[in-house]
Image (cartoon, rainbow, N blue to C red; front, side, top):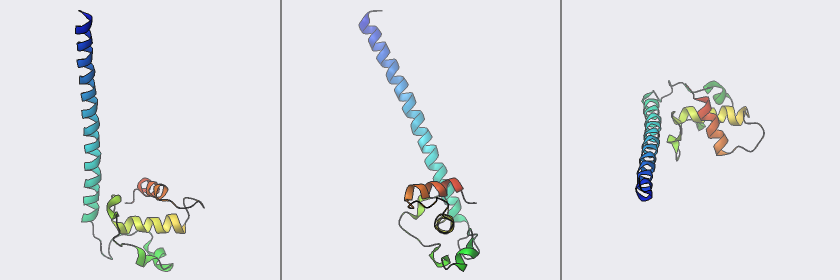
Length: 120
């Protein structure tokens, strides 16, 4: 096979492999987006009233933070749980229990903690 024909064949094979990798990556991303959206839709379908299970609700009530739970805020859909659940976790575990230590509380470590915690 002449050198030019071999180079063309190699280019075609390389492009096919790139297309295959791109398609696989795009499919993986679509699946993750749909998984997250589905989990959030399911969380929204759960009861949101006073009967809903909010982690450590009694403790938050005792220390005067219960009224701060369940508020709609910008970006409230950033977790796969209702705002009342993730807000309760942040207030009770991150701020009250200081589960992240004494370091300054920043958004990324807090978000990682909430996602790792995966409230039920």
